[in-house]
Structures are given as C-alpha cells and as structure tokens.
Image (cartoon, rainbow, N blue to C red; front, side, top):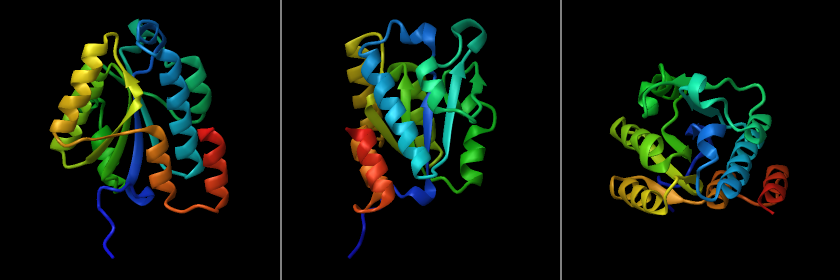
Length: 185
C-alpha cells in the first residue's frame, strides 16, 4: 500500500521556530499555550533526533527568545535576522536543502508576518510545510485566523503539535513513543 507523501517523515523533516522573543510574546494571544506547545515540539524533535532551527528577529531591539523555551533549546544557536521571512536569515534555506530536508514544521510568532512570509517562501522553494496551529499566534485573533487560512490556501498543511509528533513517531510501543507520550500529557 502507498503511504501519503504528505505524512511527515523524520528522515527529511526539521523544525523551524520563528521569533518567539520576550518583547513580542508579551502582547501575543494565548502566549502560555504557545510557549507550552512550542516546548513540546522542541522536546519531541530532540527525542527523535530531528534537526531544530530557530530565529530571532532583530534581537538587539526585541530581545532574546523566551527564557522557558531557551531552556529546551540548549546547545542550539539562534539565527539572527532583520527580514521578516526566514528566507533572509543567512543561508538557512540552503542549510535545510543541504541536509536533505524537504518537510519543515513551523511554529512561532507573529503568524501573519514572519511566520506567514516564511511559510510562503518555503513553499516557493519546494518545501512541504506543516504549520503547528496550536504553536503559532499573533496579537489579534483576526490576523491569526486569516494567516492560517492564507497559508493553507497556498499549500501549507495546517495541523497540531500532537498530530505532528505522532506522525513523526509512526508506530507505538517504542521508547521514543513512551517519551513523546509523556510530553503530550
């Protein structure tokens, strides 16, 4: 039987967390849920030994990534950027291609600016993009809703943290499954 090519495959997937910085986070809708779900994604990807990348928009002015999230990112360096899209974050897209990454899971803020522009650019560069709807947000509910709809219309898969992690696991009963199950609870 054929497996749907849209199902995430850990061999060619990476996580990209976009700009979850303190000064922006303070005005974001559902920020506690966003932080919690982002940490679940990071921890799950690390358990599964899947690459994790993260950006910071103008860190000199907007400060560092949220402290709680940074604890989960130990050993991974942020990629500083001035452009809204991560397409302008140095050679990030080339790094993804060089690691044979074809599927990118995206989380972060703000969904209607940096996240949306990055997703559209990833799609234009022939990546499959899965947006974790419960790990992205904006200041305004309308911006969040419209950006998720627009990204979906343009080909992004809109999904959830739990769905992403279980797709990457693919089977139950392993030590990784047990570790991921603890994260999800």
